[in-house]
Structures are given as C-alpha cells and as structure tokens.
Length: 161
Length: 161
DNA sequence: TTTATTATGGATATAACAGATCCGTATTAA
DNA sequence: TTAATACGGATCTGTTATATCCATAATAAA
Image 1 (cartoon, each protein chain N blue to C red):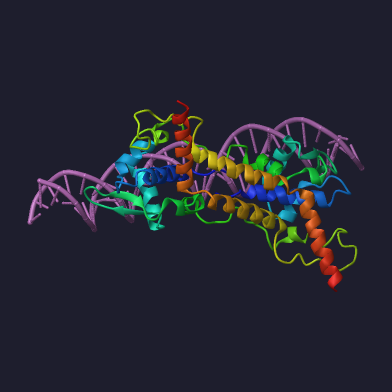
Image 2 (cartoon, chains in turn orange, green, cyan, red; image 1 turned 135 degrees about the vertical axis):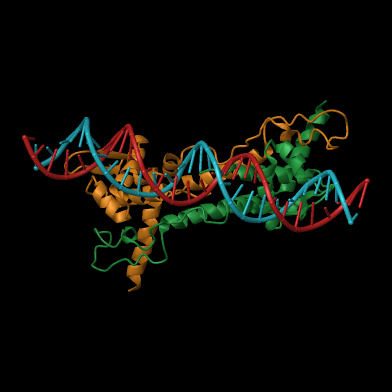
C-alpha cells in the first residue's frame, strides 16, 4: 500500500506554484522540467487538480497554472483525495456473510440465542478509525505549511554563515 | 490507495483462529468456508502468515493452523506489514533533483547564496509523519482487542433481553 | 506399513491499474 | 492570423492483485 507517483508529482507541482505565485501562470513546460516528468503525463495530473478546483488554468500564449486558492487552504488531504480517489482505506468484502457470525456459535455465547453482530464488521470499524486518524493529520498539513518549513530551514542555514 | 483483499482475509482468518483457540488446528477448509474464499488462495495468505511467525501450521490428518502467539500480541500493524509489505507509504521520486532547489532561486533567498535543501524532501517528511501516526494507531489494535469488542457487544445484546 | 488428509510451493492465467505517450482540438494573447 | 498553451481521447506497456491448478511433502490414523 503506497501513494502513487502522481500524488508525488501533484504535491511538488503545487509547491512550485505556491512558491512562484507572484508572477502568475506557470506553464506545463516549466513545471515538467522542474519535476523531471513528461509534459503529457503531468498535464493529466494538472487537469485533475483543475477539475477539483485546486488550480486554475489559462490556455493560450503566456497561459499556464496558478493556485485557485491560498496555499494555506490547500491541504495534503485535498490533493491526495483528488489523485488517489475517495474510496475508503478498507472495505470488508464480507460484511453480511458467515464470518461475522463468529460469535453466534461455537460456544461464544453459552446460551442458545444468537448474537446478532449488528452494525457491521469490527475489522472495518478499526480501519475506519485509522483512516479518520490519518485524515486528521493530512488536513493539518498544507502547501503553505511546507513552504514555511522550507523557508525556515533556509533562513536558518543563511544565518549560520 | 487501499488495503488489499488479502489483508481483509488475513485479519478475518486470524480472528477466527483467535476465537477458536480451545481446540487447536483449524484447517484451511473450515477457514475458507468461513470467509467465502477459495482454499488455494487463502492458503497462500496463510503461508505468508506462517513464514512471518504469526501462525503455526501442521500438515497431515487433523492438521491446520493456530496462532503462534497470544492474540493480544498480534497487532493490526503486524498483519498488514506481512501482507502489504514494508515499503514506506510515500517515497519522493525526486529527492536530489531540481525540484528541491525550489528555494535556491527565483528570489526565495534574496542574496546570491544557495539554500542547500539538506536532509531530503519536505513532502516526504510530512508523509513520514503520517505513516508513523498510522503505525502507532495500528499497533494499538490487536486480534484480541477486536475479539474483546465483539464479546462486549454481544453480551450487551444478551443482557438487553 | 499403508492410506487418507492436509499444508506447501511452483507455475500459470486474468483483470485491473499505474505510468506514460501521442495527437487532434480548443482557447487565448500577441 | 499565428503561435503558444491547455484539454481530452485513445492507446500502449509493465506490474500487481486476485485466483486457480497441480505435484510434493508431511503427518495421523487405520
């Protein structure tokens, strides 16, 4: 289980846009050169980001891309969900099958009545917790927060000299 | 980005083993019927779990599988890492390329000196944080903790009647 | 010792997906 | 009008998840 390269490209492209937001409209040529990725492939990714309202695009001469909203309002979760999709991290393939009657027999309940196992798979419940946890973290990190971190590190380096 | 079905099967199989640990050696036949998966496919998964010391296997008549250690010592993380592998959640495909000199030019540092961007990709750093977060959570949940939860829920149900 | 049972591992098949490229079209600025 | 640029469809390739089949080894019971 891994994030795709596309997510990598998307995040780095957005960082570049966030960094050079003074002069608008960074072209696919510049972006792809910066990331060492082909223009055609990166443009697919940028299209997704545009369709989801993360960036704006302008065709034509001097066209290109810019962030559609402030960098502090673009979270890692936003980007990841656009690229990776929004399916949940884990889906029990088996929710209403015998497996989940695990407690209904074999002595789990000593009496003769069944345990109704209501409200779904407990494995899925744990995994959903993991997912919510992950999402909380990813919402706390934005394009801007990475840029800030980079500046901080850079200035620190400069000051040392 | 999603966990595979194999992880699903593995976790449910282990729950079944943990639940019926009184009589040892649950066979692949019983397991696969329980999970609605073919014997051949599930046996591959069980082999992985065995190679990693999660379960023990006995061939021959009345053979089968049992947990190799107490259910409270088998964490979700253990199982997931066996099945999904141990690659990190995110790898920057680009660590020593131009992208990471993002701050070294275009006015980020007004002076003429470069920012050395040392110690790797900041995107990766954020993602590594997410991964550690996730791992912490997955280590806190075990086969036993799910069984406990199931019993709790079941007893609660019984008491209501 | 023989036999039936059960796990193991190799080989293979298939479908889906990631990664990537090419090209024709539409849009815009100069 | 033209050149530059983004857009979207079609396609290709390699890898991986899912799954099955079969021959082999190990074990318990008869």
